Length: 382
Figure (cartoon, rainbow, N blue to C red):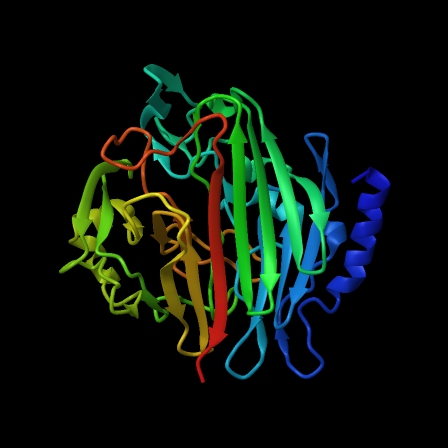
């Protein structure tokens, strides 16, 4: 896509955006997004905002970090609300204290102790950006990169990024493609594909924060969460996985039968794993072996709005985070601050770590293809 075509597309989408989260009969709880506020060149690359629509669901995506800026779905009364936390401008993203909102995170999600790992018998060193450790792909990880816009349709967008050999310390040039697709079944599907020219490690996710009552509409502690998992990953005081899988049975991490997120969160003062995380910030095991089989990762229901979110993935696990560190500093696109535990994240990913040999590998070799799929399916209780 050349520069002139890019700007023509932005202008067209600007006018389309005026109806992107609106219906003729229903009130819409969504702030209007102006593409002009995302028109910026970063690192020599053009940033923009792109609007998608299919059926009753609409979304706004920026190629800065491949971020989900907005996701509008109806509640039980047919009223649409924006259920993903985001900002109204690129400047707000650049100055935010929470740097991962809605973004693609990679090459590797989570923390890597001291930024080192062994690969093919050699020690590899990554950049340090979290205390003494490497976190979420480094300071200039995928969340802080401008992705190329390959194609855009009414209901989909395909982004690509070329991560060069040595970027943030990772070996190999990694070519990544990310596809966002809205379906007529009220789904947002995410597909990540990657290939490398040298053996490397890859474990990507999207870091959207949700509130099914709508952005800025209060606590998520009354949301009912179900995670069909018998085990979660233990972490050390640096929140790095130890390699031990702990049973959820008899612990506050047991969401197998569904319960309010806030039901057992008070145990954060007594449960050792919860004390480390200051709440919920753990990876759950969905399956033990790599396969492309799509499985249910989690279900969340907001009793007040009636909105229901089901998350499906082909990944080995899902990471649940209860937004334990937001302090009301960042102001979202609805003009409301992001407060403590007013959102949640369900990050589909392989729960493994490059330094835990007991876990399934996240190594990607040349002539192999990394494939990660996530489906966010929305519906309403009657």
